[in-house]
Image (cartoon, rainbow, N blue to C red; front, side, top):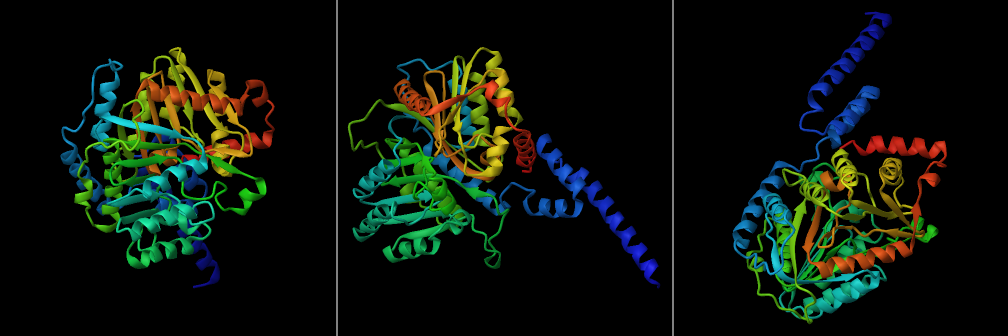
Length: 490
């Protein structure tokens, strides 16, 4: 066999493999995948077949392994059984005509009921949220459940760790869940774990990537939830992680970036739902079902209740068969009659969200969007910018929160009586890849308070105009369009 024949054989084999990869991709990639995502993957595989195919094998599936999905289904049924008949919702005021359908949708998707008789305090100051959580932990008598995407020990968060340690010394059970990959790449990760061990807290990593221990799934599937539950009586949830507001990154420090968040302090029956979500994630990671802590408690208000609200928690993520948060958001966008005001730090809508917003505009609904003037993530920032022209042309008012603040709060309001607050961004990653938690609230007083928060954003923002956007340099347009393509690779 001469060298020329061997070279020809290798070339022919390479071309044959290339052809086979392309044909298989056409058959496999579009299955159960959004058209825009399938198109992006097919383009990647077509232009760089070997690399594209390898990447697709690594991150092409956005579902968790079957055993995790089975656990989610089991715990969903447990939640349904535990919460049957606990709605306690008063109907002394008329609901919007469409509201009951959205409640039913959420119940079918995420298993959680709508409950009345709760109260919510909106916290917008970064340090104040820690003050409130510390105060609640210091009153704990039975258990403290803590779950965060990022949970780091630093000078800002040390008082919270101290409060957890004091709780353990009093005999309170402290359980902590923290996302593995997010914390692994956070400064001080090992110190955080050592501190948890030293205080005697029970802790587990969420979605760990440890192949040698048999723990592996798509590496960018993350648990993005943020919540605290104290004795089933007081709960916290929202956008804020347990970390310094500059995220302990030198690049952020050089740019003087700080994060602005929004956290809810909850009391009443809604806290039992928040605890059920923690119990779900604890069970998935440990196989331990905290049945005793799952029992609903009678609402005990530690402070005079504000207006009582009706609220419904909606967990979502790759453990569910459907994109629960996306379906909730779509339903509300289509039902809106007067106004939609969205706050999302990473706004990269899929086709359905974009269509819902455009349709709302055409129906005469007033739509505003709050984003940051600058960003901490280059790719997401440019993908987001790629939608600005289309939104501005449609009539969406875009407010850009002034630098150096990153507006990281995640919420939106529909008309004057319904709002959603939580950990979920309005982007493809939050819809498909992240475990998220959203709270749908019905209560005019609560929405009025969120309106005041939105007004404070306007006072610290500038409005993006079509004239300004038309002046964008060509290099920015190219970056925006390329980033938009990559955002669909889910």
